[in-house]
Length: 201
Image (cartoon, rainbow, N blue to C red; front, side, top):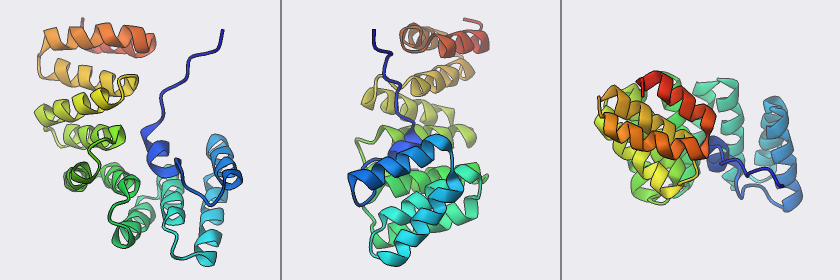
């Protein structure tokens, strides 16, 4: 029997899906991501940017590598430049917001991702990152709405269900948390166990 397909990581979905000049280049980028060779990814992206400065994909890929390395100011700057050139790049918006959140600016991240959600109404990653930004800003009611939308857009994305369940627990909505737990038990038993532990469910 084939192993189940794992749900996509919202960071890599925003950064890597469909980016790169050819199938071979996309494969190479995927290999670097799998090996977590962020230095090589930055090198590749910077070399490609010099060759083709109009292609904003390489700015996103460089920013993604910096984000993964924890170099948030460099990542934020790269994503902001991409958005200036290409305001419709929902992946760049998502990653800008997540970079801001990780650098300790959840309020700014929430504003960025609210703008992103107006552009990318169908991006599960946008709403997941928005939920994270609201959670870190102690705006749990809004976090619940965002996580719920992320789970609606990608019903197999277990992490969105988990964060939704935790937010329900924290706002003392036990019935809702219990319903999420049932869903999570089918999707990811390990996360379901963690939710049960956190919520005393």
